[in-house]
Amino acid sequence: KTADEDHNVRILITKRVLEFLELALHTSTSLKIPPGLSSLQNELSVFAGQFLSLVKHNQAVFEEYYNNIIDQLKSCE
Image (cartoon, rainbow, N blue to C red; front, side):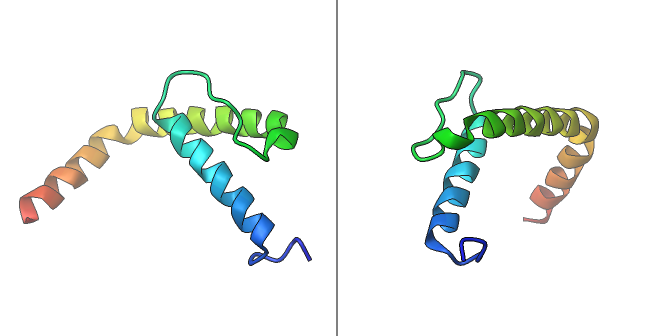
């Protein structure tokens, strides 16, 4: 039954993982694994590293395009 997307434990773990990834995007220091996720520490650390690498690559490649879109949106206001 834990595979159920509406299961409270699954919702809580998903929330904590997403909060951890968001924090990782906005800090350059080493992060502590959130409470309740220590059993996933290795997997979460590897995933976070790969995710951050992908985000940085995406930003480096497409930053100019994103800036143009933002400028266009600002001019519509």
